Image (cartoon, helix red, strand yellow):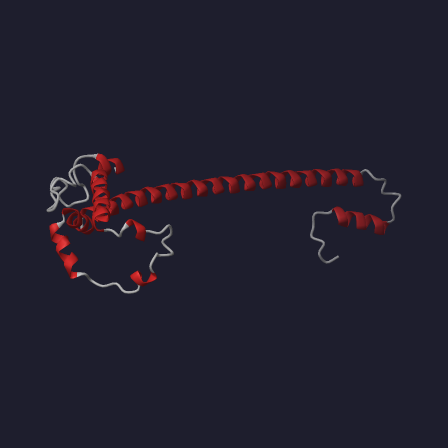
Length: 192
């Protein structure tokens, strides 16, 4: 979808994608957004070459202008107002910024945002599935360990009961015999 907008003939960002005429340069938007962007960059470079500051006024950093007084007061130059209508590059830049360029870039931005949201949703779903699988494995592992431990304790209890029943009870006194029976009986001994 991105490549169709950028490189195919037409202007899908408009309400009528077949009508790509522009007042200043009629066929500028016909060949897709990439061609429009190239023409826009060329127009900006043309404007900077024609009307930009002299080369000696440029500095290496945007933080330190060469002449501080130059930027203290910004005023509207009425003489330059005529350029908006007479220079095709200036008129094209204003027209492109106001319409086709911003609409086209907004459409591309929306496509990227939709794609990113789809990827994030997929990753979130896969992460939840992975976490669910992990929790199920942990639960099943502990369930198996618990069952094995309980079965082992039952086996040991039965072996202890068999051992106690095989003990010679005539050696024990009656109180000791009752104590052994109470320890190995299945009833609750919370009162003891």
